[in-house]
Image 1: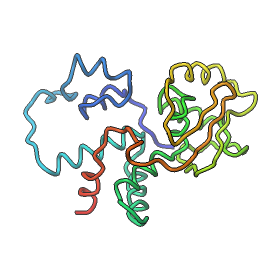
Image 2: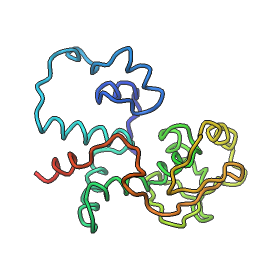
Image 3: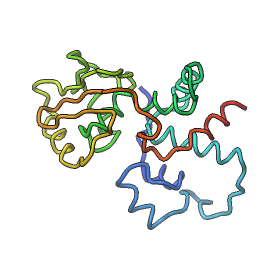
Amino acid sequence: MARYTGPQVKLSRREGEPLTTKCAKYLERRSYPPGQHGRGRIRQSEYLLQLREKQKTRRYYGVLEKQFRRYYDRASRQPGITGENLLRLLELRLDNVVFRLGFASTRRQARQFVNHGHFQVNGKRVDIPSYQVRADDVITVKPGSNAEPAIRAATELVAVVAPWLQADHDALNGKVLRPPDRSEVDAPVQEQLIVELYSK
């Protein structure tokens, strides 16, 4: 199973935006890209803007290149606006839904919880982070899970749950009410640039 395990701060500096809440304070101190030539001049181009937007979106959701391309191909075949379809598919990943419900403090933690089998979807154990949840799916913590203290600690940090989800932090369960609208996705993404990049 391939995934990026390096420092998130390095990726945040590369994209110029905090990919997690913890990265924000580091970006204030070093707002330039990492590496030997990080402070050098970068010649801006239309392609560069599109590429950086695609890379930022991939890193925000923790998806590798080949998988991201498959999401785009699937979104382009669906009716509606391709960019919005792409964000909807990424938002409906199980690891992202667990994070949005407040059962994990970061997407990385949510991915690990799912990988280790701490969550059930409609009463069945699911350990695939990319599992696509659907409307009316119920996500619960597996009974007797040894990650329950960490999950409860994460729920205390959450003030508001996304409007397309319903969460009961006391019972440690949540429900997907419907797929999210674009206005309900707070990801710092300009999806139109990604569509332009892939449609060349």
